[in-house]
Image (cartoon, rainbow, N blue to C red; front, side, top):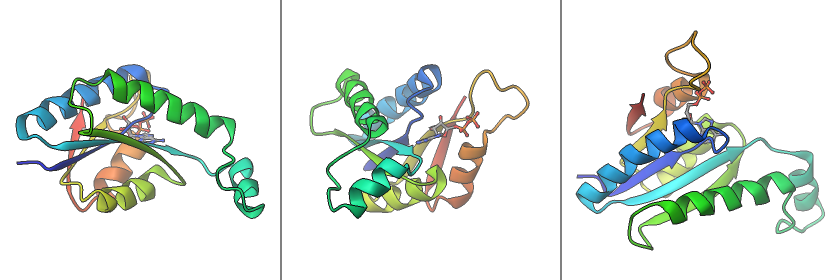
Length: 142
Ligand code: ADP
């Protein structure tokens, strides 16, 4: 059924991430789908400077840390190597997730609904933006 599942993760929110990842892995196994983990970082001045100076490979601490965390998460996932990949992007989660979804031809996006400590909304602001802007099915995990 699914060929490419995109899992945008807020790596600072382990509980939320773990839950959404569990559902995504289950679905990926069922249909042999590829899985892409993605974390979107705000555009920092360090990043802008490294590009302006012509050294885009000089990454700031936040992106290095995000990539390390994503690698750890990817390594912990019980799917064959090659079936899981990860990447980071810069900008607004809503827009960048739509861009990567089309890059990987995602046919499903799996997200968490909101931070567990925020009780006033049933759907967080990022989650609702992703749902509204996606061209594909979105599974919101609670
Ligand atoms: P809250 O508003 O309670 O923080 P969010 O709407 O921000 O909830 O988060 C819900 C989901 O949106 C997360 O579980 C994750 O799937 C996705 N998400 C949020 N922030 C990011 C981010 N920076 N990068 C990738 N995905 C994100």
